[in-house]
Length: 515
Image 1 (cartoon, helix red, strand yellow):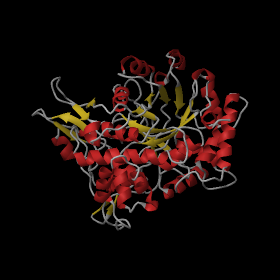
Image 2: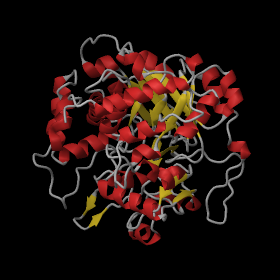
Image 3: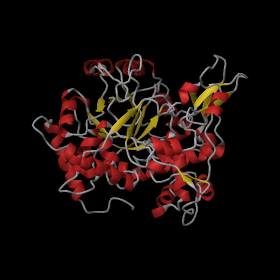
Image 4: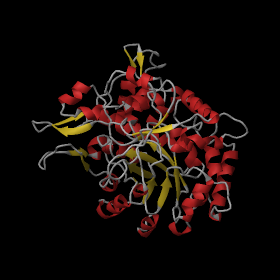
């Protein structure tokens, strides 16, 4: 069978050649280039997380670039002088001292500093180009609409690397399809920043001009497909009617998925455990989705062959799976955290809490409870309120008409001085710094305090021991794919060839990477 057709056998025969499994784009860098490369090489859609890639890339260089992978990616960047400037700014031979702090980066703003713009483009390029090594299949990248400030340079960097899919949730990304159209021709693109309290005549427009950035003519780029991650029928319809370019598909994410969840419809109510209560109003009507005539994938608790079969039967092209991949060997989650949580799963003590207030975005946020992390109240209370990364900051209009930024997880007095309300600060946690700790790049402050992790996971966490074979303590991305595509009595027979292909690729001993 031809390699390409073997890899993208459809989940639903009426929808053309599409991936059956989309590996969730879990930030920050849990869905890293290694994981995405493995999944795409095995014939499904590997997806890297685009969240805070500039910061992650800079910290990898300051850690000495173990394995030389960042250098290998930089060597493929089409503007060598920019690549060298980034390298010389952040690379530390042998890595920084363990108790030394990472170098601070400027924070993004409506008018992001040029050096940070360079870093952002380069970091997204390198993550995608490394994920594409060793195979010819598409790779995707996932962004959050809530994290708007880096959108334009991030997307352009990913497109320079040949990203095949852009996925975006946590908001209403109406303007992203048009950005993809313009960047494919290296044309300038704009994006309107959401600003609390903005007036109609305020300048909220962010601009990125590719030809000014590259300083030379480059051949046209391939426009990636765009998938909107949604949680309601209304948003699906809105995207198709009002987006300024083509929406190629939907990922329909339920409230059991990890990371940020869409808030419940209606007034927020909590159960006895303090978790947000969802109802039938929050369940997407799949018949209405089918009537839209756009391919869709189901996400949130679909990490089993039975749920895959259920999705295909409901008309989906397949499923998006996050949690199962988050704890596999190839993911970017720090090894000690993987081991600790897998042990809790085996002992039956794992628990995921949907925290209604932790995230500065005010979206409910799934937290896997783990000793010694910010999920423990005693650890959280010991952390000083510091906001020095700023990816989840809110843009707001000052009384003088300027744009400034605030975060409900920053020091309370600072937040209040910017017009924030004290009730919005209760229970807020610094997700930005915690996500860096999750992947082994925690900031060290004054040589004493080290930022702690706050690990997110879907509700499916408690059942992922099904991927542990023969008493093993770890499992691979290949194990996940093989298990998901394992035929059941209800699975569409069209999935069998791709299951066989994935198994053949896992048995292939020929070199498939540059590790």
